[in-house]
Image (cartoon, rainbow, N blue to C red; front, side, top):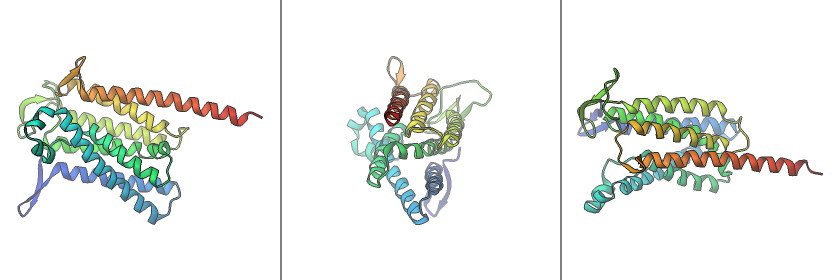
Length: 260
């Protein structure tokens, strides 16, 4: 665990914040590369990639905070200002919804078709998630349930601390995230119609989080499932429905175009 990398005078440089910066910068350069593949001019793709990352960061932070407050509403009623401005609560699923909403507005304003742009950023979302989980490992956050597996870890100064060996679910999710990124990256530009790659992201990311939650310590809400699992099920269902509907629409369009 390395919660603080170093200090600049009295200012601590937190490892989680550094990993978030690395995640956003990685996605920035990947997006620039993807825009270059589309033939976009250097100045335009630099500006657009910067805008997307900025909007994703703002929307993600706001969405994360809202999700965190909803999940901890009783604590919010006790200390609303503390909950709003605390350093905790950067919940990925909330960030995904907030970031998606913000970037969608930007993409539409810039003249992109939604599904086309969603396909382009799908690999970037899971890459950012995987890198962010490294930050969680460094600060000892979002670990799993107690276990006696040989690679179990303790987080004596974690958030919250534990001296009982637990599943290092942050490592599991980082590895799975990189794996999903590899699949999506290799499939970019190969799936038609537009929207299939993003749909596949929803299914793979939803399945990953759903199964990881069984060894996480999040509170359960409905049928013994956590809030993240319920949202993961919705992600898988939405991705599946989108694939079916998009393929149906593409088939109907092909029939119409081939008709005399």
